[in-house]
Amino acid sequence: MTNTPHIAPNGAEIAETILLPGDPLRAKFIADTYLENVVQFNTVRNMFGYTGDFKGQRISVMGTGMGIPSASLYTHELIHTFGVKRLIRIGTCGGLSEGVDLFDIVVAASASTDSNFLHHYKLPGTYAPTASWSLLSAVAQEADRQGLTLNVGNVLSSDVFYRADASDAKKWADMGVLAVEMESAGIYAVAAAAGVEALAVFTVSDHLFKGTETSAEERQTAFTAMMELVLPVAAAA
Ligand code: HPA
Image (cartoon, rainbow, N blue to C red; front, side, top):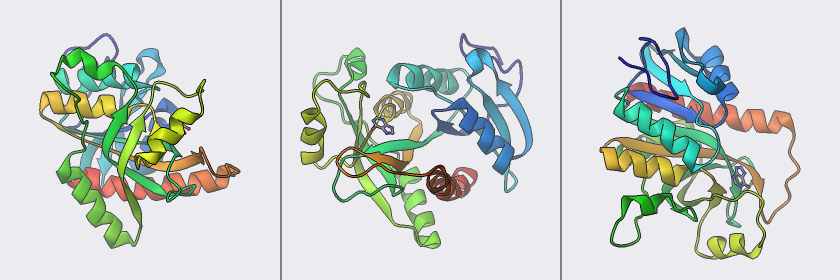
């Protein structure tokens, strides 16, 4: 297996199912905490990637960096050079909907965007980046088993973190968009164009219209719940 400009496994294995946190140190944390028989497959640009066993199944985990340009290029290389078939983004999002609270779990059934990325497909209309039903339904079933409530719906994958015009966010909220993050529309489109499966699951780390006081301990507890939801799904997929 060859290397790409951004991923250099030098022959180390990459599993067909991969978890994709934005933060490469979070990828390391997941590998250290949850996986056994771990091999590191990438250090290029410190975008760490690992493959290991969860409940006897090989899965991989790698950072994507922030934003659609970064996430979409790693996703493209993982799929087209390394044969990845199922991509599960795990991350944080900012709540937009009044119905979403801090530390809730949000699952992106679809991902709207203010990015120009989708234009490069030159489609004769407006594309709707959509989650894989098999991964989404598997996460919903696992949440039922664990007694977890999910918020499933549309998210906004934005190119902008610090908005010049705060009323933009309200417009998306008024269209029923649950939360804002920065990668999923690109990951969903790259996966769809390649005919592979993708899903994005988040914990709400802040809320654009509600209080945002959170402790590190609360954030870690929420992250742990999300990991323990997604890992069995990844291992069974
Ligand atoms: N905006 C964009 N991405 C995010 C946010 C946000 O408020 N919170 C977590 N990821």
